[in-house]
Image 1 (cartoon, helix red, strand yellow):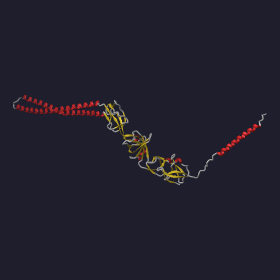
Image 2 (cartoon, rainbow, N blue to C red; image 1 turned 60 degrees about the horizontal axis):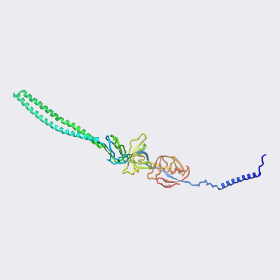
Image 3 (cartoon, rainbow, N blue to C red; image 1 turned 60 degrees about the vertical axis):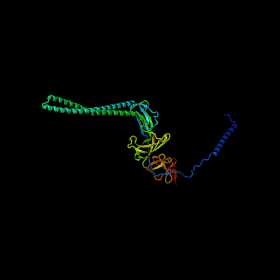
Image 4 (cartoon, rainbow, N blue to C red; image 1 turned 180 degrees about the horizontal axis):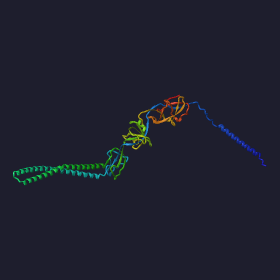
Length: 437
């Protein structure tokens, strides 16, 4: 038989159970009585007010976005024109230093060219002496010709007399032959003298040619002497210096490069579709991004007549005048990569909305019943109004009914079909223009 339980134990356990149940009920009652009352979910019967903009076509200059590199309009690659050794390199000729037009950049060894000049000068002096000698020979030959002509005339007269005497029997044939022999000798001497006189002009022409060749050699040597002194042809800044003291250079070798920063040209590549709407004189905004954004303004000065079929772009050129030189941080230097905004030539009526009005290529409008509706749109291009507060606008493709009320803040748009009140604003001017319903 199981042992009998003590009645006192049973009573004690029952009291403990009752106490625990009572304590749980008391805690539950306390939690219920002290719980907060939830707010009512009934919404007041009020309508939300939204900001809208009434759209209508406005004249818009389409901005074309392109990219380009700046380069110096005036630059010089300084070459060596002769083969020689660098003997002088001024200490200030280093990359980054400014140079002036005519400033000495380097000097080459001119010893060989100076000797060539001296040799040519001596040859010219020798030819001049030969000219003097030729003048003397010409006078002597001319005198010999005159004397020879006189001698021939004398002998001819004597021959006539001796032939007359022979005919009269006063002279024998032997005497006549002797006079004829003398006449032949005189004519031979005259021919020789005449030949010497006729050869003087030929000799003079030869000497003239020799003198011209030596003068050319002297001038070339003198020019090479001048080429040994290398000076800057422009004002500018040294970009690179490619030589060292004692280095041998050759003709055509670049010694230094100088760039003039007062005039910088930027070749901007635009899509070929921009050709019909871009003209010379159109405004251009150039932007360089980096640690800080820098901007320059210019205008289209030239347009390339040829499109690039490889990347379907066209080239426009923008000249930036930087004289007098601006501050170092504001100066546009060659080699800068730039984004260019080129305005079109003529404005075209287009629909324009604040960028906050478009979300996921859709806009939200307030219809005539003051209810929210949504329509898809296609954005043509973004634009920022000149002189504005920096608000970005989007120009739309296609049309909307004139006076359509588009919500300014698409991110905060109520659900489609919600009835709202609206407030018409002008985001471009930053002021209210009226209110609706």
